[in-house]
Length: 132
Image (cartoon, rainbow, N blue to C red):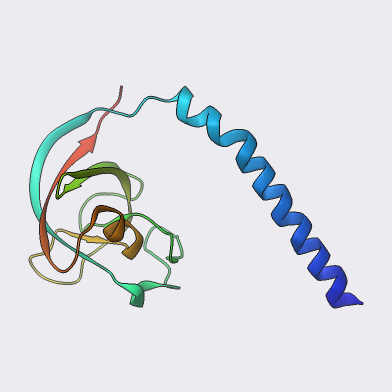
């Protein structure tokens, strides 16, 4: 009986979350234009891989299969940047400090690396996401 009630509450919460997302997702994308790119820099980057799943970042996030963000040794948590690799550009943010490998400026979460097609250690271009 308790298990059925818990399952029902979880299902209700999921339906509510999906409904809230559906109602608000369209508004956000139309209301805020993307920030402009500031500067252009080149750096080595690699993916954290799936071994990072479940770990808490220095910025307080838990990395999961869909988490998108980067680790950088100097940039503070929350800084938004554009990354470009193989003609694909994405707006992302710093979610951790690192990387631990000398010579690499960025570590991308597995989901972000997959999104831009980055495999292994590659040279990327990045820029700060400035204000409008």
